[in-house]
Length: 272
Ligand SMILES: Cc1cc2nc3c(=O)[nH]c(=O)nc-3n(C[C@H](O)[C@H](O)[C@H](O)COP(=O)(O)O)c2cc1C
Image 1 (tube, rainbow, N blue to C red):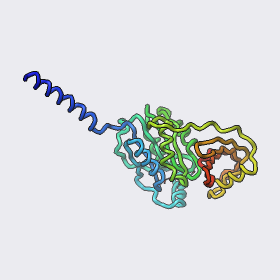
Image 2 (cartoon, rainbow, N blue to C red):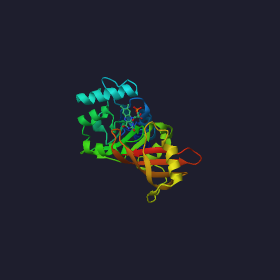
Image 3 (cartoon, protein in one colour):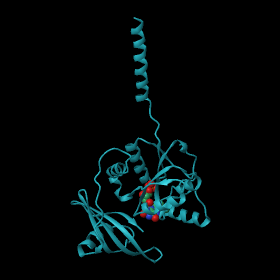
Image 4 (cartoon, protein in one colour):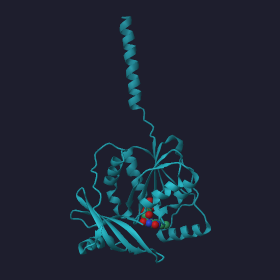
């Protein structure tokens, strides 16, 4: 009888331990920390949160950027002239708790939005793995990733994810592919081949370029050469383009274009 009771107590203790382990919410070591003025970057942040199950926090500034596009541009120019940066409201997340921080922002003037400039001026993220993510009208992922590497030399800045505001409807499938390829979630994603060698553009290449780019609010330049690759059901193109900067200087850029079957070509990223 004694032995039977001892065995019962032992079995109950073991099952309690398992129950606790499986049912207590696990603390995430991933934080999604982002700024979003008009809600586009917020959509990416929330998709990341959904797929990663990570903690999430939106950065807020004491004097919100609540004007329209032109008013925000004017305010930013004025602040830059005065050397001013916005002040962040204190945020709840304890950064010490996290090993990985997905840092999100809209691209403003070719760099991360001003609230994120304030953030990286105040926190050095030493020893943290930073995964940048951003949204933009035309581009800025590659440039801002490089800028973050300079601004945060004590952090490990990973390759990030960016999407044009106009393509935000693709966020779910693109985030899944990004998180799978970067090893954050389990699954399989096709690895696309490299682009073919750059060759002078043909009339058809120019037509594809114009179909993708001519509707954009700013001119994106003249395509000179192009390479391509098969990417799942789509063909992707990498154009080398000559254009002018807003102050009239010659600039070269790379423009990535994706053509899905029976769909209008769309540009996915400009790298200047
Ligand atoms: C002040 C300002 C500057 C911007 N500068 C750029 C830029 O340099 N390059 C770009 O591609 N988009 C630029 N944009 C467009 C935003 O990056 C884009 O609309 C973004 O998706 C907005 O994200 P949000 O809704 O999270 O604020 C700018 C927008 C604003 C308001």
